[in-house]
Amino acid sequence: MPTTVALKTSPADAIAFLEVLSVAGVVLDRLNKVVVNTEIANEMGLVEYGHLTSDELKDLAVRARSAGETLTEEISFARNLRTAKVELSVKATALDDSHIILVVEDRTEAKRLDETRRDFVENISHELKTPISSISLLSEALQVAIDNPEQVKKFAKNLQRESKRLGSLVKEIIQLSRIQGGDLAATVAPVDVSSVISEAVDLNQFQADAKNIKLNVNAPEGLVVLGDSELLTMAMKNLIENAIVYSNEDTQVGIGIKEVDNFAEITVSDNGLGIPLDQQERIFERFYRVDPSRSRETGGTGLGLSIVKHAALNHGGDVNVFSRVGLGSTFTLRLPLYTIDENSSGEG
Ligand code: ADP
Image 1 (tube, rainbow, N blue to C red):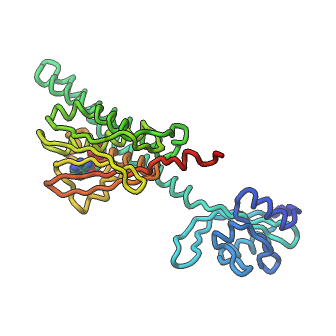
Image 2 (cartoon, rainbow, N blue to C red):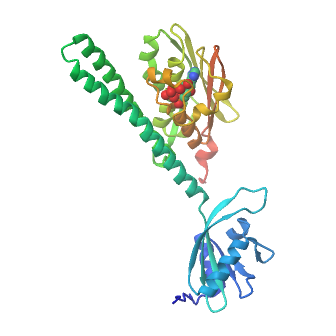
């Protein structure tokens, strides 16, 4: 037998309550006309001229009324043909003998995040499998070759390479999931971009020296952004590291900053391999590599630029690339400058 959940609250009180919670709510009378609704319901386009705009929402209200119980459903809703669909979770319940209330939650962003997470976990599992199975095969080979010092040396070296690869993969996965969670607020502070660059350069100096690549840095102090210095350093380190990895020996890499329209514009330029035009957007995707076999040789994880992109977005900036195959690449990371206005807002 259906349970009647009449709340015995007046339509106006119920809507006032939802308004405080910033939730979309609509109360309908017996003829399914809108009696009262929250502002958010208007903003979402659920109500127009005193009527619900979605037949599915109306249908849910009718069914909740005749069932005499609370119904919860997921509904796809588009305001009109030109707007994107949103995913709504809707609860319909009787408010009293003549009114039904619909409480509507926009789940689009939450669903998108769920999908991104699921994708991410699938990709990670796949990427982790390769070095793990290499390590397992190499250790078996090592056991078999125990009496052959040359082979032992070779397998041990490969083992070291694969375990290093596994280590950097895990480190980058942790960084990426941290930024994707968007949880930076606690570590955000004014950061001088030049200090981030100088640390990132230090982290890459050894690798640059090993290939006799000169790092030309032009990073004057004084351009300050509001951000997470560890994350920004990691992003810069990745850009400089790529410039070194994808360049030939005895070349040069340029690193500079300048102020453009209230942004700190950081550029990293190389005269390396370059990136084909049709792949330039894809390189910022997780685990995407232009040449997977070369990337494997160099120990690349395919996560470096994805970290750069997310770091840029989380700081209200962006990253783009200009590149020609055979000539080289320039990556530009733009971060909004921390201005005096922001500094003093809310004071005096
Ligand atoms: P990886 O760990 O493979 O370097 P990234 O996410 O850092 O992963 O880069 C993705 C791909 O973009 C690389 O595999 C490489 O093919 C290409 N790429 C990145 N930076 C450069 C560069 N400076 N020059 C040429 N190719 C680059």
